[in-house]
Length: 281
Image (cartoon, rainbow, N blue to C red; front, top):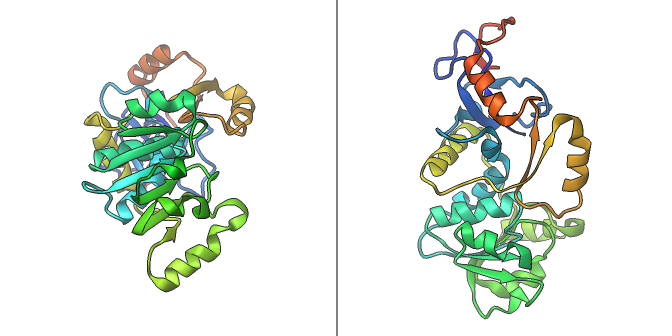
């Protein structure tokens, strides 16, 4: 879904963007994604001008942050809240650490040994090595436990929750185990177990919000590997190992990054037909 690139052309009704603008955002969820030379995005869709001095590979960061932010926003996570993030080195988890800190929460990040320094550099107040100790026996209670990787369970983590604490997950859990708990939480209206989804139509506002966090130095990309487009199958094989940290970037342009930047910013847009409308190409 994530993309970063240069505007090639705009529809006649587009006012906020112009050809050669450097932009980033997310493809609409029902489109074919960003693994192509061109994508078409509504002007009011999830797209914004890239922060100044940001490289293209540093701007393909929206999707993980989009899902991380949905839970943080739903419960107004902020000063005075304590949140534990399990799987804090992945795309969603590393985004959750940074966004929770930007909102003033106290963050405990649970990761493997090799990622301890990473989550500290992202702002975690406490980094816990799950390979060296049982994170469920920290002797602390949290307002929120965010399961960001799909490898822990509510029943294992519930002892970490305060009396009115919430367990948030990014999916329905192993073998769908969270589904009955989500239904129970909905009926009881206690928000105990939830898979918070981003509100429909919230993409544009979110990308603008994330841009602000990037400009303020409160959010940055965590890039594991970069692949050229013709090696995209290898990129997927690596991602499917479940060992990636942050994001994996596909360089669609064949040119090197520096040459690509110069070429895309200096060359005139290629002429091709654009229908009247609010679309950005």
